[in-house]
Length: 327
Image 1 (tube, one colour):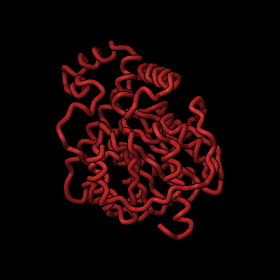
Image 2 (cartoon, one colour):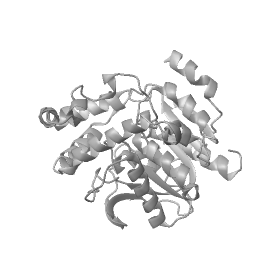
Image 3 (cartoon, helix red, strand yellow):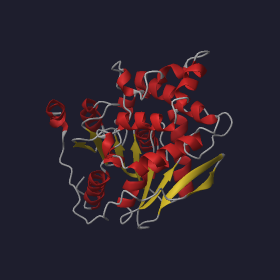
């Protein structure tokens, strides 16, 4: 870990961690009930964390995730912002409309439509993993909708060949024609408990720290999604689109896109991220014109779930510094 931290240290810019009192962390809090909202042609499922109406935070989940990924962080920040976490089409409880392609651009358009639907003015936009990619696109093309941007391990291009990035080495084969369905059936046969624990080992630096009830919640959600024919289509389509952004060049490159973001931006990365190397963190933080980087030791790919208090202090520190004109 020392080597990794030394590698990113040149890009570490002072991030003022907030000293504002936060609510005690309660790991037993259940995901807040959501409701379906009609946004254009989409019927999005959205979870609302009631908070200070003076500011609005919108949370965008990652690949294979859902609005439940933001339960603890949105609760920590409720004293400073009203929080909304939509399920992207094909994920969580948002059924995709016919013809939806699950591309990063389409996901970004959906988030833009939702922000316009909210009609709250510029919001604090937060995204994790694939949601970070989507949030960055939104911030680049619609700066009028984004007050600040927080990216938690955004899925920026990382082309190292490695099967360590998948919860099961058979997973990449599920997108192949003909044989893909057979591989998917084999994975499904593992059962919800095994599949959930595989994902936990991939996304958390210390899977043993995940409370049992959170594992049960994930199993219940996975079982619910498994009943929808569109769940695998959404996962496979979004995965392929994400990989295409990694090899895109010119104006479509994610590295070029970052330079177009004008909002104050915080990049949060776990030093033990097994999915996207923390070595990518300095580059994305430097390319964001108003970007700063916060690296969390002993943390994996979903810092907002594994270290919600630390992430909340970093995000709130940015909000406060922006309010003082110091970012």
